[in-house]
Length: 136
Image (cartoon, rainbow, N blue to C red; front, top):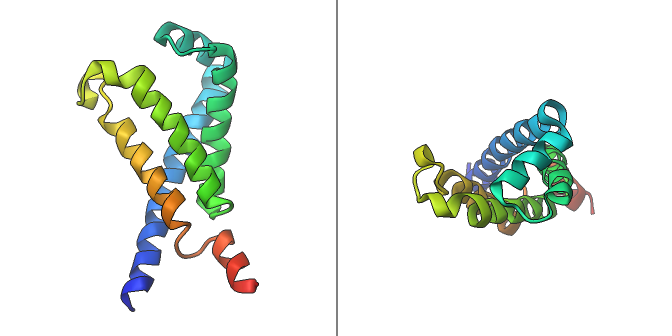
């Protein structure tokens, strides 16, 4: 296998892993906590317009994660999730320092950069985006 083939598989591995993380987190917000519970939590964290963001964030995470999983509109989904994570870094975690053990931003930053990488690199191997491109 050549180098570009390995890169495609590596990006796919990143895409699927990130997708699972966001499907689970978005699903938890949507189906366990509910939008009102998420809104209350966001309000306590000082997130602006908590009722609106409580609806937008879980939808972006869950459906963006599903899009990443199958590699459909990968660049857009990844950029949308990266924007959510930028908000998490800036509005929630940055004041708590770097380390995740103290509520810091290291994990949120990693997810932000992983999604920016996917937005820039595309879906990698085995994706709807890739199959649409090869069919053209």
